[in-house]
Amino acid sequence: MPNERREIIYGLLFLLPALVILFIFKVLPILFAFNISFHEWGIAGDKGFVGLQNYKFLLRDRYFWQALWNTVLYTIFSVPLSIVLALFIAYLLNQNIKGVGLFRTVFFLPVITSLVAVSVVWKWLYNPQRGLFNAILAFLKLPTLKWLEEPRGIFELLTGKDLPYLLEGPSLALFSLVILSVWKSLGYNIVIFIAGLKNISETYYEAARIDGANRWQIIKHVMLPLLSPTTFYVFIMTTISSFQVFAPVWMMTGPPTGGPLGTTSVVVYYLYRKGYEEYQVGYGSAIAFVFFVIILLITLFQRKVSEKRVYYEV
Image (tube, rainbow, N blue to C red):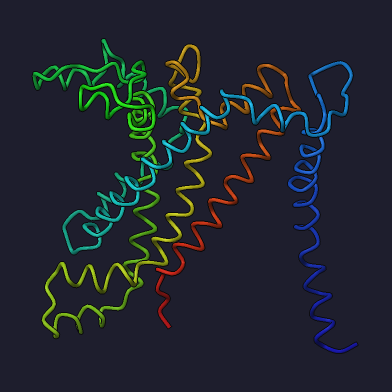
């Protein structure tokens, strides 16, 4: 047997245990859920085949579209805020300053803290009567806010005018969850950006200084282009994780969960509600697969648009 063929066979044999585990615990459940999405599948009773009925009903389900819109708003606000803040802090922490290790630890602590525990603490911070944030606003002689109980859009609150639905922005309740998300993910993104900054050779900076470039020109024309692969990675991963938000909605909003007036109801929570609270497992599976296709299309679009602006050092 030729050496090349023997190496391929050995490689497949080494991969076989991992492939078997992947197939049993990942691929099979996905195929099973896809099959369920074509059935009227409750927790008990007959499980009749209904074809595309669940998908047709989803197209007319205004609560699903509200949840999808809330998810899009959540992503639109959380992703840019998270990336810009993380990049700025990573740039500062990449300088030769005293106590940089302590700062990195402090920023990374939220990442390793349980999201459920964090949600409980932040719910108290947002409490309109006893919360810390309103106490600070009151100390500064500013009007206090209802935070997680406020259904009005943030642009409506800022301008004091009634705005059309698409212009009013996320509700203050949803934006409060965005703030928590940015704080929670900041440390992870900072670490990724610091690794990217460390990977840029000092010779590029030195050449720019010799050419007379100032600090801003070095950042704009040297650092940001060479950091673009890292930024692209953070952009994709933060977007996907934002679309999957669930725990803060479940822990911090309501009753009922997803309130006020459904302004914090996101797709993953709506899927959970249909599948595990109302026992419409078939319909919940249909929501999951439609949502999967939406995230896939958005990711492919991001790759097509953003990859053109990514510079890979040769």
